[in-house]
Length: 246
Image 1 (cartoon, one colour):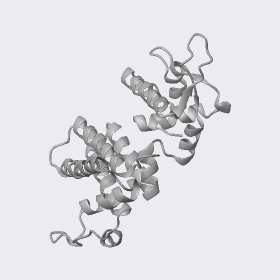
Image 2: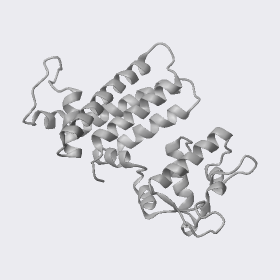
Image 3: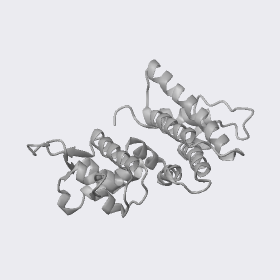
Image 4: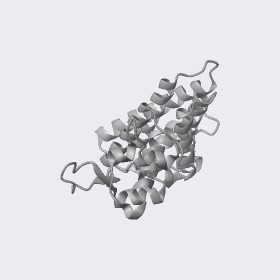
């Protein structure tokens, strides 16, 4: 059972609730609760939401619906869109421990990358001392390990276009690794798609530098800065790793 209350953790918890009791339908407001009444999700997590947490939970449900992991039954006359069930895609997501397309891409490289991703968001949600610095470290580690595990030196050096970079100890750069990953995961691209992927590669590198500075800086990083960097990192990694047609 998930216990963290990040958006990612809440989405898994919602799937767990909806997968119980023969996958029966649950009203979305009975699921997330109300200000004066705990919902099924709170009971499942053993906690009580404040209003910002309840809004986060509601957005998590909405995201699951947009991604096709839960769906309204459309059978209730009064509120046809409010009674939700887990879809077969949601069941598979729960079974595979993959909540979205980036999870699927990361687990295809190394399952440990999911732990790093989840750890980053859990640290970001934590109020513990130095949690933000840990989140920044985990975010940078996600980028670094994805590139090294997904495009190791031997694979990069075997590419016909490879030219060693003299300022790198091994001759391999992050840009090299990103190009390998784009070609492996996304295949042949049009000029426009290649330009977008190239800009996404630049964004990965820029976010990595930002997270590195935040994780090693003397001043405590700002929560909003780390969250923005994590969101940007995931957008860029998704653009690099996720096939055009899933």
